[in-house]
Image 1: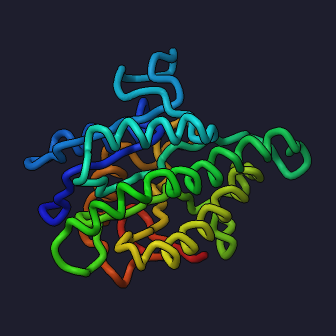
Image 2 (image 1 turned 90 degrees about the vertical axis):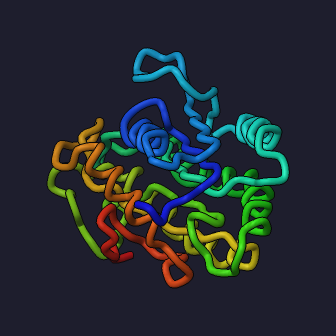
Length: 243
């Protein structure tokens, strides 16, 4: 993980699960980032596992703009190196029980949220890229990491027999396309963009991979990302996930 050296990182959905795990791992690095911003929807809520960060609703444009302004006040001209769009929700609906309301809510949070966050924090990411030595894309320079899921792979039917979660799958498939679009549009600004599958983690959704194992693996992957990886869909072990 020695290759991952960032001055600043922002993690959404940071009050528990993978988001909290990421924040803790960043802070426990031998050379931790100078700034670790932890944003979540309800930092004082009953489900929060730690009291940190500030309220940032990823589906609310005004909340996102306020968060970007606040981060910008702290970072100044140094910019933001790493934006990790981890916040997401799931509704346990099947093909027969899915609703317009749930589909809209999940899509807004899981897909539109990362779009708006990318737009709002792009100026800070550009500043970080411009202040970095060299032209090669990397997470140490400037990057957007969108937390996707194997469930969003159109090629794979992973987990279908256990959880259909229609709106979640569709939102993650759309997030993958957004990641590809961001990689095409933001490459000229020196910003790397990757979709990352954290594994079927021991959070609200399933048992196989621990949060620590997932986060540790993902940070190793982040440290190795370069020009060739922008616009790709990878898992927590660095393996390519089919679109």
